[in-house]
Length: 124
Figure 1 (tube, rainbow, N blue to C red):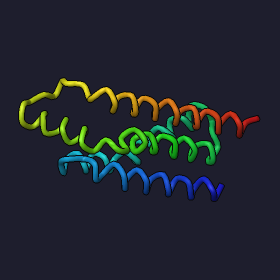
Figure 2 (cartoon, rainbow, N blue to C red):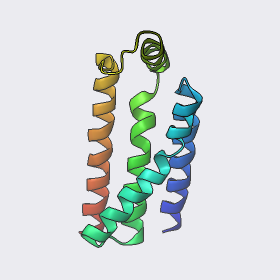
Figure 3 (tube, one colour):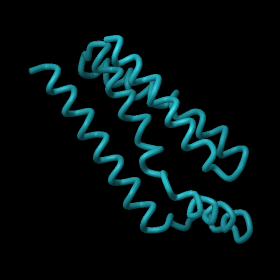
Figure 4 (cartoon, rainbow, N blue to C red):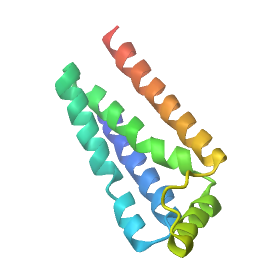
């Protein structure tokens, strides 16, 4: 159980250390600091729905928090270009570049697979 708390703390630190500096505006930085709070909500909802124990809930939290940094790692220029285009040209409906989409979707699927594997392995 203590190990999962350490993993959750480390995942939160990684999320904040990677994602907040990438964000181009102060408002985006503030929003990115709320990612761990959203992950807590997801973990609590998962716990209520599936009756997870605390270790399972911390696994879900850690996996959810790590989606953003894994999805945006190394994509600082693309994120800044999207933000500057939105500010200068009003392009708010434009999709993100293909590489960013692929990396974010891969991170989402990988972290959901990790969370599912840990939960099922814990029940077996």
